Length: 181
Ligand code: RP5
Image 1 (cartoon, rainbow, N blue to C red):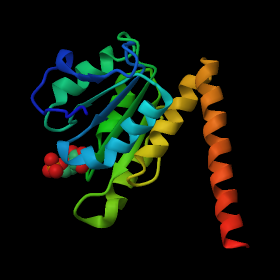
Image 2 (image 1 turned 120 degrees about the vertical axis):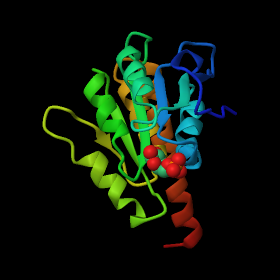
Image 3 (image 1 turned 180 degrees about the vertical axis):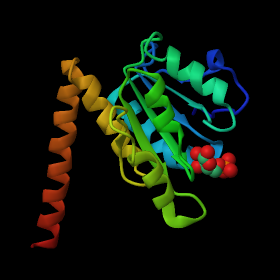
Image 4 (image 1 turned 90 degrees about the vertical axis):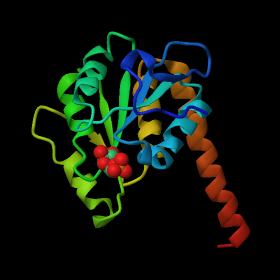
């Protein structure tokens, strides 16, 4: 599986193509310490057959890299960016300020403050610069939202989402049956 490094340039972005296609979604995170939290997003995109890339981009430690990544993202064919960060989580908001693409922010729970600091940093964007913020540590939902965004102009992903929703409902119904409630 793709293990991002903190020292690669943007052109060295680690790609995890599921179908040799150019990536449609960029998963970025502020630190390699975010990887365990962000990995489910990659797994969901893999499951849906959405080509993606995954790398480290830090708003504070690698600001130039962030500018380059965000400014070039739509030119490279990305359709959405998932950005995870913890603490003073400026990455999703700054990326949203630099790209016309939809940005989905994942607040990562750090060692202190239970992730509420990250949540507030990401969700409280000024009018005009939207970030779609998911729940703390819920990178799964970030990926599912990215699939829906891409699905709006790509029927096969929308169909796959309908199937996913059907399977989820069936799963719950089976649990209800088993519990006889
Ligand atoms: C943020 O600071 C990262 O997104 C991470 O969640 C947090 C802590 O980073 P490390 O000190 O663990 O590298 O930029």
